[in-house]
Length: 405
Image (cartoon, rainbow, N blue to C red):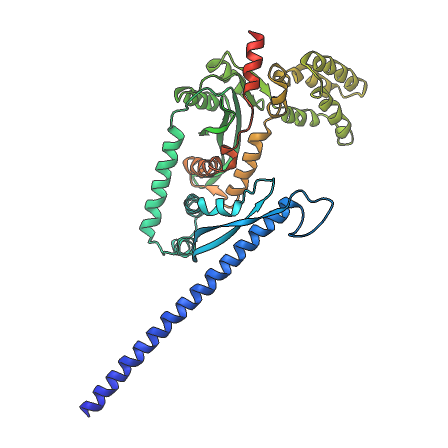
């Protein structure tokens, strides 16, 4: 009986070993399938991007074709499924810049940002563990999630407090309203943002700060922080006419000009215009900023004011007559920069992205959390082409300054 038991034990051991071997083979087989699928999908996406740039598929002859293929080069990429080989298309004239590879390069920062969003949105720890396993391939403990959030917060705070190096001739200012919980109630919290263009023509995130509201006290504290951290060489600030922002600017940067965002000004005027007349008034206002110089624009303001009065739009006429000149400061700068300077649109696009990413949170637990998530998103954006692509040719500004001197 003992021999039989021993035999059964050995058979069980053999059976266990067989099952284990089969599991390993199965896992390796599945890994190959997943890796092959990922590789095939990524290469298909690369081909699709190349087709879009060329405005035609490979070997396709069309009148709208912009470029042709010139083969491809192979590069390896580490993914969650393992190492895959990409066949990156080469084009004969156009540069091929793909967001696919950039996305994987920024995977680490994206994961950290995702963890912050999950934490602030109140996602359960178990769910966070599941998501981190999908993103990293490793299930992290609740303590690890908490510690990682603390480290990310520390890095963001260090980034926000870093010295501002070099002059920034152009600075865009704006604020965004988010909701936060306060004593069981949901109230608004303002997050102020500053974006600058340095002397080399690149955009940079200069500052992100909580404001109790967009008033003079909040803007004063924000500008003081920018000044303390080294913001210098500002020749023009661009912003909406927020409460207190103009007064605060004159206190810290009296030598800098201020440009009121033309688009925000249009909206202020539209409030005083019947809905049926908005389209016509919009065309009139845009004509002001289509003039060849400031003198002509001032003359156009006079003409528009007179026409608004004839249209019985006295309130709109008064606003244009009183404040339209605040939208003309950009005329003192190179004409090549006018389109970027007359509105706050470059910063508005960032604000829309922030709203998109913070909408899922609902109400933040406190103002600091709101600032951290906004700053995390802006820090991520700054590392993309937004911050690494030259935005303006600042040689034009130097030429203008020398001509005036």
